[in-house]
Image 1 (cartoon, rainbow, N blue to C red):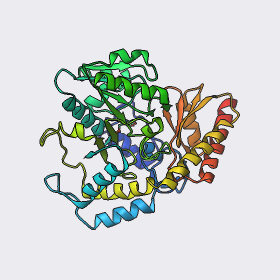
Image 2: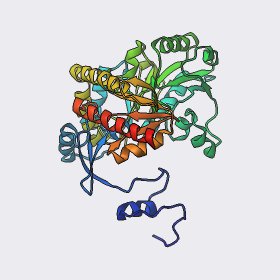
Image 3: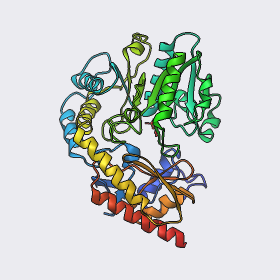
Image 4: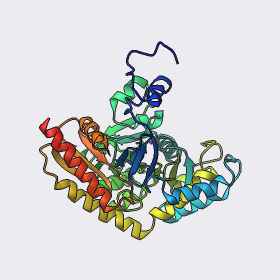
Length: 403
Ligand SMILES: Cc1ncc(COP(=O)(O)O)c(C=O)c1O
């Protein structure tokens, strides 16, 4: 690469990090001066042999931890078979995964794609088709995040990532999360209401049961479809296989992605037969969606995370982790919130400062919204892993308090 690298690039000392700053598109901010080459469970290991305790799970993706035997074995088996056929032809794992997802959920049919944004994009398109003429409006909520493609971005409540790409998709309207008085905006012109039962990027905010049930009722009153985005909170993260189960509601559509294949890219839309009836060949599609390798791995992950004992354990560990976080004595902590193993600690300083300081204690956490440090450990993290995370976090906060 050129001698004319933009001045904004910081020169690092690790040759691969330098190369990343020179050759990768710089859409992700600055990387730490480290590359990871291996891992095990909650640990990520750098090329210098440093071991980090990973409480991010690749942003809720590696739900069974790094180098999971379940994922690796399924991947090795799948690697000995077909890699790709396209959706012109069927392969067994895609059909088996669709069947398993349908059997485990409210849904009658599944559509496979490759990411969370794509799943939401498809979900909105399917909702508009099913809603029919005169009903194109999409309702979304403040603090929402649904992805970076135009349809999903239009439903995302973050001006900084939307404004540069205007004009976005028309006929989207924002309501306040948790507020029923805004429901008047949901009317006979609404195709669907798009909601995260537990908001992730926007600050780890669980909906209340009363509000979700009122939202379902309002959708029914006016004939709007309820589309839940469980890309981050779905598939066991909250202690139920699907987060909406906590609220005793049944959605019309659901988007899944992040943890589905334990680290490989996949997304899915699950839907009722009434929605599926509105679809027709050619109305939507994707070349890679539902490939035999990724669906074989997703099947193995689903088999693991859908076990009742596994889900009970997530609930127990979530309560344990939360209570340990709540016991940290720090003036920097305002609140601990979340569900299961999707927890946020609201702090009264910039959470990015906490994230960076935690790095020095080899603890990996991420942020959510303007003031939350987010913990998304693997769903099979041990009590010792969680205790270790709490201790490193407490030390980090104590150090920051003294600074
Ligand atoms: C709730 C939710 N929906 C959608 C997305 C977008 O997923 P992806 O990054 O796979 O496109 C995310 C990503 O963080 C998410 O948290």
